[in-house]
Each structure stands twice: as C-alpha cells, then as structure tokens.
Image (cartoon, rainbow, N blue to C red; front, side):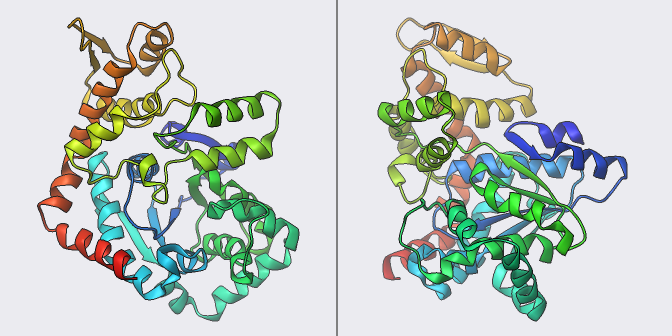
Length: 374
C-alpha cells in the first residue's frame, strides 16, 4: 500500500511518519480530493490527478471526489453563477471525471462523488462550527497568504467571501472525516493548516500532493525564471511561478482537453513548447513521464519513438532511458511530439467517443451552452 501511495505522480507526503503510523495500526484510510467546477476537463486534472485516485483505489483505500460548487462560486468560476455551477457539476463535470478515471485504468464505481452544497445541507450548523474552529486558529494575514490555493496571487484584489475559502477547505477535510487529503502541490497551504489545527478535531490527517502538469505553451522566459528562483532558494517566486504555468482551462491554449479531437491533439502538441536537449520544465517530456509511461506500464508495453526523417524506431521500457537520450540530443523534439500525440490519442479514445459520439455528447453540449449564455 505504501508503495502505491508514494508512486508518481506523488511528489510529497505530509507527513510520511503519520502515514506509516496509520498503516502500522491498520487504520482505515479515507481519501478525498476536491475540484472546483470550472468548465472543460484537461489532461492535467483528468489524467494526472485522477491517476493518483486510481492508485489509491488499487491500494484498497476508500476514495472520494468532492465537487466543490460553493468554492467555485466564491472563486467566481463560471462567472460566479451558482445555478450554472451546480448544473455543470452534476452533469458534464462528474461525467468527465468518471470517464477520465476509466481512461487511466481506474474504476469510477469505486469512488464516491460528493456535491459540496448537498453535503453542507445535510451537515447543517455542524459545518459552520467547523469553519469557525479553523478560522479561530489562523490569522487574517495567513488566510490572505493562502489564497494561492485558489489560483490567485498575493496582492490581488479580494472580496471578503474569498477569505473564507481556505477555512472552508480545511473544514471540508474534518467534516468529511478524511484522514488522507489529496491535491496538487498548489493545495499545500490549506493542507498544512489542516495538519496544524488537528487537535480541534481529534485526529491528524495526512496530505498527499501530486505533480502539477504544466501548460504546453510555457515560454522560455517563464522556464528560466522558475529555474533561477529554485536555484537561489526563492520559494515564494518558485511556487507562484509553478502555479502560473500549470495547465489551466482559463488558458485554453495551454491545455489539452480530454475530448479534444485527434486533429486538435496533434495540432496542439505540434505547436507546444519542447526545447531540445532539455528535460526540466519541458511540457512534452512531462506528458510522457506522468501520463504515457504509467499507462504503458499497466499494459506492459514499451514507449516507442519513430524517427520521422530517417525511419527506425527506438523502444524504452523506463522513462529514465528516454530522458537520457533526449538530453543527449538522440531524439528530435518533433519525433517526441509525434509519439506523445499518438499515445494521447489512444489514451483519450474512451473520452472522445463518449463526449463526441456517445451519451456524453448531451453533457458537453449543455455545459458549452451554459458557458455561452451564463
């Protein structure tokens, strides 16, 4: 079980000691990950975040996906229209998460889907009490510094509702009775607060953070800024910059969506940033590492790169070998792009068929109509 929890795309466990304690005592692990309802689902969410959910399922852990409609409302997603947010949450968004799980070998029937507003309604005043308990333990300054979990930067103009976002997210963990909180690295600040205020709720949760897939159109300037910030130990700039370049629906040119057509996938990958001989902060290399290699590993297949100019195929069983050859210039960026596009098309076939040809078409059309008319 520990091996599956630590398996990439996991990049951090807070704390591993507490996790080991739970495992040694044979405590039942109860997982959750929360998602804002923000429109079309991209591969960073659908194929990386849910890859970790599939790992938890395989480990026999009880998994749950929290459809955070109130948080989406506070963060002004879908124009801050709560009715639209709820409709998309119960329709397109939930269907997109289920089919994404299937794409990477998970089982949506083994994961509980919880709509935030319905959960709060059932919990009643108890939830408000939990929000107040958390709020009493953090300062206004810390709440403001933690807004990065909303995809916002320090110094941005906020309304008062946005300041309760973090206490609400922490309260969600304890209200759900979760001892394994899961999210991307951008959710770290909320999870650290949850770990610190545990005495108010009687148990200390563990937080598992997965890698944030970067957008495919990051610039060389952005890349250099992040690498320099990391080199000089500037954690604030580094964290804000990483969040700024993550794949996001709000920057559609940076994202590949789970139901993109074959032509759209090839076009996007072909124009993506992919510096030769560089593996750090290279979005095409990241897709190979965090999506394609795990998928191929489950199928016991090799990663095959065709040389488009000279012919011939190179085969790789492990990512490290591909990484080494790319760094040495033995694989051309266009050959890698073509390979990654072909594999993504295969992986996303169930989602593409469901949303473009099957029963999911009505959900996608409804969501797009709601976005246009909101």
